[in-house]
Amino acid sequence: MTTYDAVRLVAAREIRVKLRDKAFIWGTIIFLAIAAAATILPGMLGGGPSSVAVVQGPAATALADAGLEVRTVGDDAEAERLVRAGDVDAAVVAGPRVLAMDDEPSEVVNALSARPAVELLDPNAVDPALAFLIPYAFAFVFFATSLTFGLQIAQSVTEEKQTRIVEILVAAVPVRALLAGKVLGGAILAFGQIALIAVVAYVGASVAGAPGDVLSLLGPAIGWFLPFFVVGFVMLAALWAAVGALVSRQEDIGGASTPVQMVVMLPFFAVVFLQDNPAAMTLLSYLPVSSPTAMPVRLFTGDAAGWEPFLSLAVLAVTAVAMVFVGARIYEGSLLKTSGRIRFAAAWRDREAARLSD
Image (cartoon, rainbow, N blue to C red):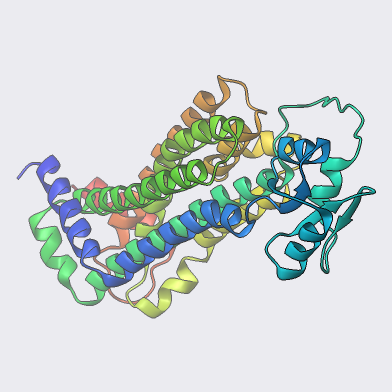
């Protein structure tokens, strides 16, 4: 069996096991439901335009031009009756006066008011609500997915050590092929889940009637987020596998994985809390631990030049290769040791001794 065949076999096994896991299936469904709800429900809950009763005339024309639902009536008495019956939200009668039951209809008042000309100095600025939600969404998705799948990889490695199955596996496939297969299987599953979420979010925003300029910014940001996510996930997955190999019991994973969890958590909070700081976001978009979320955010807000994501992704890829090397060395140096928790230095030293004796 070649190394390629071994990696493919292990990856296929990891994928099959996970696709049969009800927790994974339901987790994916919940993520998709959240993505759909976050993009579709705000528009639905916002309701349609206000309905207003008015006698045919200039006021009716002004209300219709403002996008309100106009219901023409024969006289003011009929307009007031419709308001009292709850058939319309408001009515415009002679005066002019606006009638409503218990809440001032600001849309109607604004439509009838004389408004001065407005000149937007920054017409391409992103809506403040979206400017907060989009960075939070990118950061949360990367944080939650990396943490969830990473812990699952670590638990899988530890379970194989605890049950001694790993001794059978390494007799059939090389240790590095076993690691590569686990990382590849987890990356494929994570990418598939993220791709589905991205598609549902984009379609949901389109269905909800998001402005075209928002979609034109969101599309490239999501498009760049996918490769950044894959490379960043591979970087972290190798470290999660190494964490699983360092311990021999599931109960010890929490303590051993604290450094990796901090690597995942700190960028999440950094992007969320520093999104209004251009200098900080520029720095975060080049740091490998935060670039998978910070760079797509800068692309969405229009703060990144066209060449920047290429450079940032290259830096992330180089770092990922280095972290995979580190994770593989720790993994190899501790996988077959079942005498308790192995120290990082001991795993590194033992792998070097094993290499020299080969």
